Length: 76
Image (cartoon, rainbow, N blue to C red):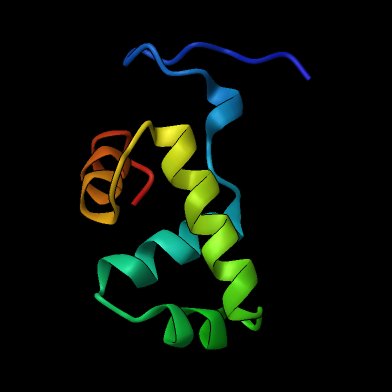
């Protein structure tokens, strides 16, 4: 798969998939890990792993920072 650099300088291969976008939207609503996991029909462990991966891709050290960066990239 060939990646494309966006105008913001981000690699399009880093774009979140549909499930990750849903996860970000639920986190932005302030839901807990357990509530997000339930809504996505995944385990809390899987939800936390997904959050950690998104934070890594965003270069964020916390959830709030990840939310800000995701919004700037128009992921949510």
